Length: 453
Image (cartoon, rainbow, N blue to C red; front, side, top):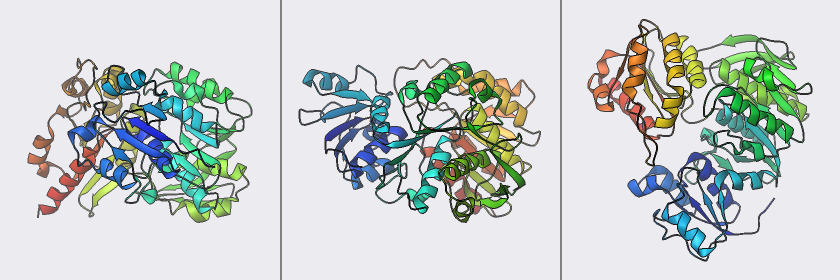
């Protein structure tokens, strides 16, 4: 499928969702211009370089890139309405849309598979696209996480411009516009507290189900999804009976062996949560008449998403992991998996914003307290702040103190303090969202550990 070439401006192009759309539209032959405050602060930002290599023009976020030659301006929901670019686009009469509005339009032009859930969307959409690609279906992808095997010097890995009319997309509920997507098929992975209260998210998922023309694929083990389960949904599971249930499961430190309907499969990713992601892909592809044996021949070759259980160092004694986990459900899944690998771990968590920290503070405390063992320790880094007008009335110390009060070991500290006392631990897990420098921090921890005799 092709689009009539347009000149499109993307404000907030550095965001994971908007960078995917911008890259996708550039690969489809459109002229793309973009800006981001993060690029203004750091012109050498690696994503900025990648986007430029793709042929995208990056301009300052001061309104200078908005002119009458534009056919459309698309704004990240993180860009405030009083920003110069928003005001200038309105003054010039340039058609403007938010990222979710524009994404909803794209969805309707394809046979779209929407991947929804409060956790696992990036891995699942990346895995599904990878498998479809290797099966010769030439899918398109609009994702958030960066698929390692899609990354090139011109592609961050979060979008694919295929030759077919299949589109796999992350259906994120964060801004509520998921209710406007009208996909062909929908995967529902799970339902937990993240951007919104559970019942509010459940309402959005109900709307998405109603707007889905084809099949619904649903995790039968997720208790919160029971409130929106439909009778004709195709189910997958580990524990409960379902249409596609994993059996003969053997969890390894970094992989999982299992079978579905008598066919043995291997997933080169660890943990129950990744097994659920794989089961959703397996069920959808099999319902598309792809043989389970063909899926089994490819699944083990998928290497995952950047910052999803990324092993930075593992020399038998020392371990450093980097992970995007940032809501209670993701953190719980990550820690359950790490528990199988190491008995003594220092977790380093950077909350991804003041609003999310404030909303989930109680659940963060409960999650860390229930998973931290007596041999473990948690360091809470300062809350990530990308600018804007969010109230700053909650702190990392609030979280660390709440966890200490449950009897678990926790402290709030700066990155420099962690590096100064690096010898205290052999195993580190760095977790948190939005801030790409967390990966650099994990690599620096690994570098210092290697220098210790």
